[in-house]
Amino acid sequence: SQQGEEDPQALSIQEGENATMNCSYKTSINNLQWYRQNSGRGLVHLILIRSNEREKHSGRLRVTLDTSKKSSSLLITASRAADTASYFCATARTGANNLFFGTGTRLTVIP
Amino acid sequence: DAGITQSPRHKVTETGTPVTLRCHQTENHRYMYWYRQDPGHGLRLIHYSYGVKDTDKGEVSDGYSVSRSKTEDFLLTLESATSSQTSVYFCAISATGQSVPYEQYFGPGTRLTVT
Image 1: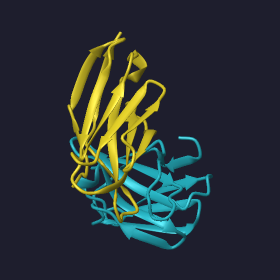
Image 2 (image 1 turned 45 degrees about the vertical axis):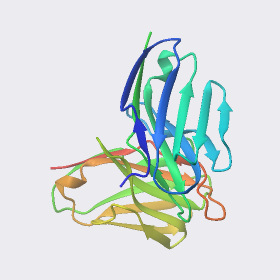
Image 3 (image 1 turned 120 degrees about the vertical axis):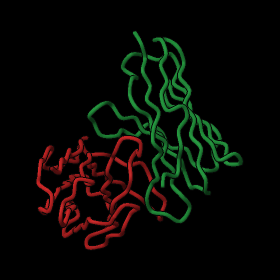
């Protein structure tokens, strides 16, 4: 079963708007990661946030982590049509050597 | 996709036949993974390897076996393909340290159809 669950399952916004996606998980983690997948392609790593971090930025991406609520959010600011993709969170569960992926959020940015 | 190739990229096979998918990396990363991706399920781990000849099962390992005889190659075998194994298969690699998974790098995927 998936460790992470993304919300919403699908999101459609206008170019220039901000997009926020959420991820909830169930067990203690070492880190949480976000990935992007363009249609028909493999996943691409976007950002990793460790369990002792609360916020991290990378370009137009902002990730927050609340370990007390077992949740994370990914904010994409000033979205572009090229941001259209599926976004997945993945958790590195404490004691595990692998990641557990959620089912993803499908983001559509309308030009 | 740099540094990771998968072959074949597309395959159609018949039920009951064995199928082997190959993942090749040029990054010398220790960890390699095989996932399947199906609508509504996200990515699910089939098997992974933490070194040459060292492998472990993931959450959906039934009907699959793996082998890693060299650092750069990780093979996934469907022993007797079934229609439920129709899926897109992704290989990933990671330079994990001290048992804490770092970021993974994914191959382009193999689309397998079992008729």
